[in-house]
Image (cartoon, rainbow, N blue to C red):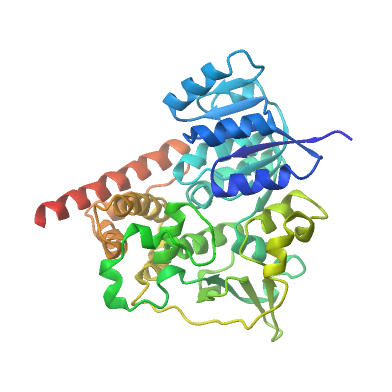
Length: 393
């Protein structure tokens, strides 16, 4: 049996590693390409285990170091995505999991050469969906969302038409501070914000989960993938992290998908027709083999003010690009102890008050160049806000 070829973009991140954990256990895939940034030891380990033909390393220093180490091996090393088309004409699967805006161009390009692309980069969808969608139609590429929420929505919608749907609920765990007194939020440290109670994720997305900014992004992502009206979407708190989306039908019934908080489940089901989680990860399956009591609550908007940004996030042409970029800056500043936890959303609101915001947010993000221009503006404004506030302290 001929093996299916697969590329894993963001191979050293949590989604990339989960994908490779599954691939390692089956014989039907050949890892053709991995792409990573700077995690030297993990890249080396993945090269040794999966023996990819192509390795993209975006960090210049790590790229040169690893390229030198494997100079006698039959591996093609690249420092960016731009020249990969000279080497690969078609690939069966691509896992798009490079975090942040950095994943935009690789996602757009691999949509051109992949039969199926598993989308885990919400920023690429939020900022450049029309470009990704356009390529998917032109090159007949199947787009499969693997974020747990959007995987659940896609699964639940399969047997229903748009006019049968009344509402779609996207669940949020509430993160590590769900039950913390709001008066103590000012004392939150980065080490506390990255300790998610249910999910094992990277630092940036863990902070987004703690502020609920990840849900603001996910609503926008859902509107691109499943274009219902904004009023049909709602976020609800579900601390169990076992239900990831709920579909309320007009016939009076509701549907939900239950699965353990493990990204291997949506990834495995996207990759394999007969994925058996119990066979792959029996210890984890045993932890979630019973349907327990399920809790759902409304979002406390005072505790999680990020959700108040949802109307603006989806109100102008390029608001998603601006808010996403500024949020990346503020989360990074928080992780480096330059601003407080509360400042992340507080400063985002200041970006929206900038004198050039309305003009910039109405610019069309209809090309990668324009998206980057708008993104750059937002980052500059965000850093100026941080600098100005530091001077005032």
